[in-house]
Length: 251
Image (tube, rainbow, N blue to C red; front, side):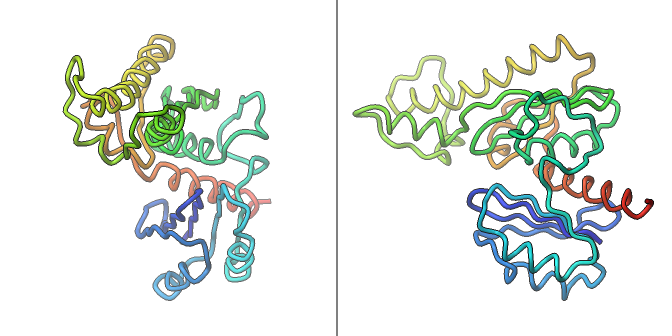
């Protein structure tokens, strides 16, 4: 069994995989070993662990896990992955983007892929059918755009991202609130649609996968043209863990 831990800016996601299948997961606002201690009593067969983090204050957690697990891996840009990374500045590539790319390739092997992650920032990354990660785009996410409108203007209100799902689309919004929600939410839709159209014309049979914290809002607006997978990063991290542990075992 594998324990996968993904630490973001504000939350920690953890999951247990057995033979590649996700069997348990949790989300915690904290970043401590105590938040995970119970999982070891529940799943005694856990013998591998991977940790990916965007923070710098998780050293105690990493040390605790490394001392408890037979095989421990801290996922960084230098860790081997089962795809060819063609990013020109791999040292600046976010580990979550790379893990999502691996997860998408695991689910859809031998296909051209576009991975759109609706998180704090919105990323749209391309993986080719031959297993090459090319890179992609980064733009502000839903809440970041709403916050910017309030922070960088004198009179526009601070709207929350959870107001967007209740926005009823109109061709020409007639209130300031609706104008802001339309500009941000519909703007993101058109941006992503543009990426899908542009890459779809270049990469044959392109498969688009949505993931990230705001995926539930956007997946409804693209109907059957995409696949949504909220655990894409976790799946990718689990694949990377198996890849490195198996490779070391076979040396």
